[in-house]
Image (tube, rainbow, N blue to C red; front, side, top):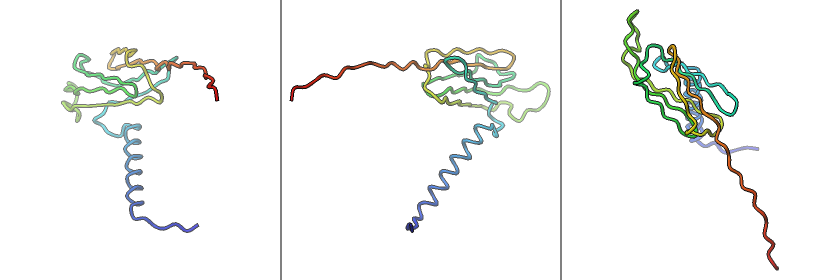
Length: 135
């Protein structure tokens, strides 16, 4: 089958490839200004980990919705060496493969590792019956 060429197809292809590259960069953490992140599936939920050594947990903002966790803050000054991230703001977003319950979120910071635990949303299903209509 012969199809007619549409010049906008190239733009669609470029947009798709740009989205793929951005997703790979985020997933593989190729951006040094972002903390490393890890997502683990646990029983009935997920555990998201953010590597934030030296960051004051009181200065970290965590937002959770049904689809993702967003962590924002500022990298501290490094007393040992000149860190190119020093004083830079960071933001890391971790998305979930299924909907979660934001009210279930719990955060813990220990030894430079921020752990955020969330549970999957419980889908509420309702059984309905079919009423018969007289014809």
